Amino acid sequence: MQQITRDLAQKYAFDWRDTPLLTVQPGEPFEIQTHDAGTGYFKSTQDKAIPALRPGFDRTPPQANPIAGPVRVEGALRGDTLVVTVEEILVENQSWTAVGPRRGPLGESTRWPELSGEYTTKIFQHHPGPSGTNRDGTLIFNDRISWPITPFIGTFGVAPDREVTTSMDGQGEWGGNLDIRDAAPGNRLYLPVFHPGALFYLGDVHASQGDTEFTGTAAETQATVRLHLEVIKNKRLPGLRIEKPDSIICVHASKPLETAVETATIHLMDWMIEEHAFSPTDAYCLVSTCPDFRINVYQMVRIGKLSYVAGAEIPKRYLR
Image 1 (cartoon, one colour):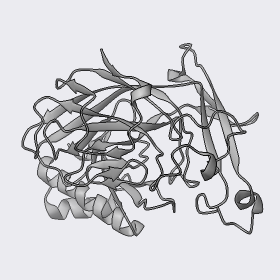
Image 2 (tube, rainbow, N blue to C red; image 1 turned 90 degrees about the vertical axis):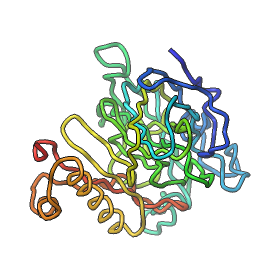
Image 3 (cartoon, one colour; image 1 turned 180 degrees about the horizontal axis):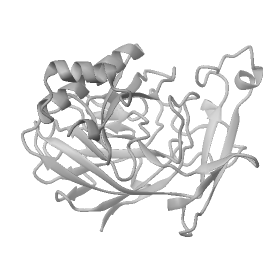
Image 4 (cartoon, rainbow, N blue to C red; image 1 turned 45 degrees about the horizontal axis):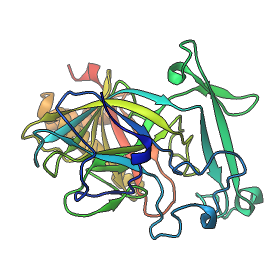
């Protein structure tokens, strides 16, 4: 099986000029070993998120949130759709999160000075599950709280049309730093293709995350991701789609949040109309009346240039 090793997973931009690290056939499984969002800097609670101490933070924009790629897919052309099937994510033995001055929405808090007056790094240990691995393992938050490891890919996408966009705050119809917890094993991601070979990138795995990623940092970890890519010819999408076993989701990143929500919902209606035989009237009324229609706010944090990421989701049982 072809593989991108962790030492090569240190790109900091989605750049159509990059030389592919791998070329794969449609449907061919391959692996990517990812760095965490700090490129290995955070190893213990003594490693603080002080910009002057972090490698790459002397650059503008900072070199943070590394990705691996690009991966070239044989036969993919502009105007096609790339289908990413996430087969497995195996995280390493710990993850981290960090808060402190000018980090996140409470980085200047006067109500809770400990959030803005000092830097704090928390390290979470991962305990293997019944399989003996972290596939079914547990994240230990503290001596009272733990939960199952629920990994997903935080940053993924294809090379944008013409621009070069950073992996830290780049977002668009092509993908980017979206922190979508549904970019997880067993699900399929649909992306528009802009360049020959698609030029796919991936990184920033999280061991778990709450909706909105409120502090701006989730349970950041290193991982090995196994996946395969396929191509739907001559099909151009308006933006990112996700197919889960039991539902479909359209995702949009924008500000203000209501723009992201409205656009994601319109894109979901388009999917229902074009591929599931809904009339525009029925699709419009369904998303307003169905008790199982959901808006997922995946990422909504005031950091840098990041937009807010919303997903409009409907169960497949309503599409039959």
